[in-house]
Image 1 (cartoon, rainbow, N blue to C red):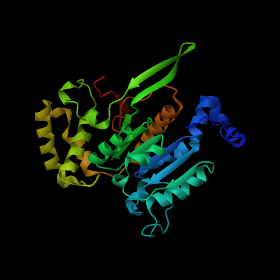
Image 2: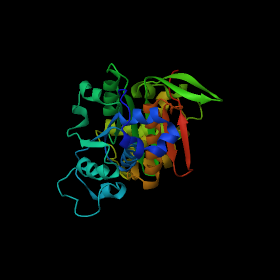
Image 3: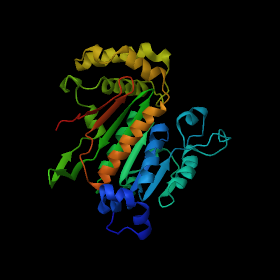
Length: 319
């Protein structure tokens, strides 16, 4: 992000939000470049939010064709004859997002997420991935960390009526208001691989049950070579068996990962639109804070479950 000033057109369009977070924050937003891979309900909510906020550019990546399941949670795709029409999810979402804010450059990047090398991610300030494997999360995060500049990395997953956001801002400096003065702060974030490698027995006793449940399902999909979300109720016995094995290895009581929670995650992999809206809103807010350098960032996991209506922030790191 360079030091260019806002144009008169940008200043007029973003007048209201400039009054909220200031000219400098809006300038940073308007010069930022965001990459999003995996376009389901939660990520399209996020895309809508940051396009309206006025980022400089948004690059979309999802070569999957439009299906009925995609239409269920993706409001950017018109419900007409798009099913089987030949356009990818990224193509159709791109066309819709351009209408939200013509001043934001929205484009499509074809190709599998795993095919992009380290240099590809250098042109972005923020990378958000969803609907991808455990290996892909680790790999993309590591590629972002190899760059000479700091690239904010996020993963987001929504299953049934609950979901998870992970944040890696690396070595992050920011400012926040305390009383009548502005205080400079700094936080050190672990990578996704480092965070999930922390032994469960070392975590606080009240860590969200959803954290453990998501790790079990991730591990099951990896072992069974399934794509994210390719589970059903028939898989529950094997998922419970894996849960028991992991709990034994980590010296964790199995009650910390209830059968009922795992059943929800494997039996209903569709996104619940209200939960997508919550997660997409939180993610948009966090990305805006990371780009602007203002306000306490989320460190480093966020969990939401509509059953109890609670959103929980968990700091799962060694620092």
